[in-house]
Length: 452
Image (cartoon, rainbow, N blue to C red):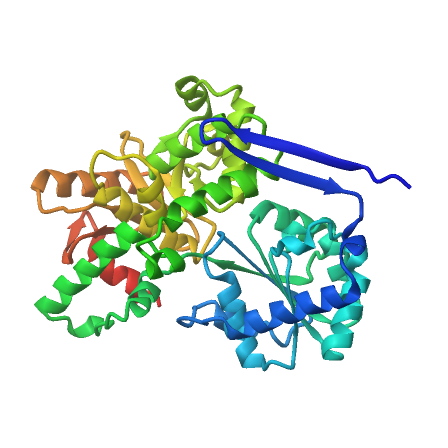
């Protein structure tokens, strides 16, 4: 008749914050009556249906294309990036009577486990009748969630699921739903989405006036400074980016991975968010920050990636082993977030431009590398699938800067079978042609809009 409760406590002594991770044996059913569960589900459904659906996200088309498939649709991405809003946009296409909605981020689901799914389903049936679609938010909060999703899918029920932990989702999906799900990644607003959100007119790129170009560059500067996370853009007077960052560090990473050295995690995250686009070495980070072992550094960086705070990018090399051991470049999920929580003496527009270019590329492919040339230069991006080299520079008005960027691309060509390159900068310029190698020079603002 006794009930065992395991509780792990994390304390951030610097900020006097305490975080609890409860691992209760199945006690969810004992906490609420059936009427209370129904009331909670009804409240969640009404709140979800009434939420502001905002601007239409590009990924809505992906959800619609997957609607006719029997596969689960799994939307992953950073906290507060708009996953629930995307689901709401799709739900309004379905109609209010077509789906069940459950939000596992609700603290009233604390203690819920996979075996409680039947009781939850029974309550939904009694409330709404039979429906063939489940829309579920933040599913990673439920241990063993993949078991009940698989079981209900076998009964012909369609699932649309969101989650904020990339590794957790992929691992559990891989073990139980192999080949039976469609992954959708949701990022902060692209530049085009940012313009629509701010209600800035998107000009005709084929007929840009001087004023159009100036306004577009001003909008890009704003985008690089503020980023593309919806709520902080909507409520700039609140410190939402800082709160979001702390939630990810403590709730999604320290708590979930049971990290006791929270200060070490904070120091590493702060260093990486303060130095986006830089190369980092696990060994050098260990020595510089005096943070445990190389494995600790490696694990913490992996956790930060899983929480969607950062991305790492390998050098391009025909040897996979050399790719793995070489220094990696680090990018932030959002330039506004990096500006809000990192440390810089002054705005570094060049780094923000490179970070924005990386995010635009990463939305379309995972296969992105940087290149170290035979002559010791660095090229920011190489896309093997399209044989494309891309360099980013804040400005190439200075002759020395222009020559340096072109020289790096030409040197990279020596080891790669490529006939052209691209420089992204603050304005368009005439192409450079060297020994049959064409280098196009484009405005980053226009290039970001071209692909959408």
